[in-house]
Image (cartoon, rainbow over all chains, first blue to last red; front, top):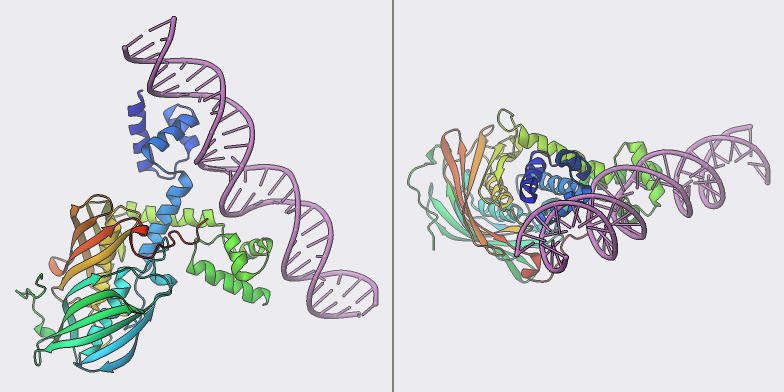
Length: 198
Length: 198
DNA sequence: ATATATTTAGAACCAGGTACTAATATGTAG
DNA sequence: CTACATATTAGTACCTGGTTCTAAATATAT
């Protein structure tokens, strides 16, 4: 068996069972353990423990869903239909374990919660949003989201809310939200092409 | 601090971060490494490597049993840099208690997680997104998010990912995500990648 | 036959432990 | 206070599944 063939087979085996040790691979491929290791090097396949670690981290990060709270972040100031401020501190459970950077959806959730809370209506739901993560947010940083209502299209209409989130003086996130304020049934799925690209 | 208190704390720490080594625990609990190990024995907590292995096996099993399983909020199919599918069932804790409608950020979080997971890179972060909540999602509905990579701008560039989320046949959400794939250092303030990992 | 590539061998070292023995500190009952 | 128990610390040997390095043996090509 040529080197290339063997490396192909090695890839297949590890793909089919990532929990295989080098020692097991020697038995399956009938070459020495050094050859197995050289092959792994060339193919850029990490050792068993590293493979397991990566799988574990990956699944762990995934499991971390949003908390049960209705609102993400503490709303510290709220003028209905006008503006609001919310504070949210990034804790362990909000970051990627690997690098301590906040998962985007938490930053979004804070802004979204605020944008919805600010609209003084029985039902307020986000219809669309255009958002930008300006810089990443790290563990223990405190996000201060400031929301401003830009337009209020009467009852049962859309409201536009801008949210800017800061860490200290630095802008980390900005979002333009279009929030429906309406009775439930009215929600349409038709041609509401609201999230127009700038 | 009493033994019981310490063991409670140990449980908390490991629960909050299963990737912690005994050595790190000595620093946090201010006792010797032998004490940590005795505590782990008494509490039936396996060593770090065993914990990672179990997590890895668990997630691997889940990915393998993708078709029938009622997996909730989980990525059931993933082709790195290409496409992916995630399932998420809306439960009590995800809805507005008043009307049983899902908070937008959960639907967003599912899509965002998927968009980030699909990018096969050490660091992948959402840079910006343009999203639309097509119809609202109700309690107990099962959201199936399907992601497709639209473009991959080489290493350290942006990737574009489209995500469409369905309940049954109905489109409920769509999002266009721009995901950064890069080394951390590239972003501002040179950070501390892989923070406390040996 | 000589140069080059490939494969194997072996030793030192590593992280993150287990398993075990032994010594020391702390408390508690008689 | 002593005696005993419990809790804590220290230290050693050993384990797995590797990495890293040097060196030698074997194949293959020119």
